[in-house]
Length: 165
Image (cartoon, rainbow, N blue to C red):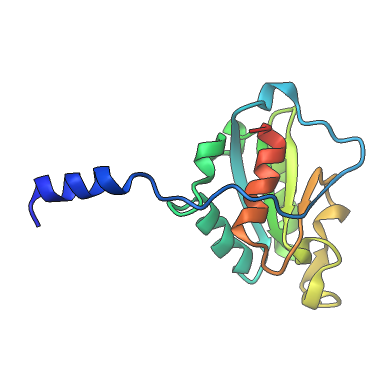
């Protein structure tokens, strides 16, 4: 296929992303997104001990099909650059300190989003010797994305609730 033909195909097709859909999320009572996050939020993700189902959906949410960046959310590597901390999975014994360090390193005002049912009540991992507790036990969660695993639309809805886009 020639480059000219490829470019004409891209021009004809246009941008192909999933349409915006509202999904069920839980927002903490009294939570108001900080005004400085309106339109744009830098996101640091922490896997506190999940089965990776939520990470796959988070990857899909930031991938080309759902494209969370069109709503102003962008993944960053350092918590010092982040406005939002997303957490997936139960908090294991080995992840208590790294999770708290990440949250402490994120400058205020910050927003904490928990992704997946395991972040509340520990799901199927409840009672395991390796589990220290749910995310709610260690931090005040502002937005909770329900589902096991949650759909990419729900993750984007949570990010849109923060950026108000």
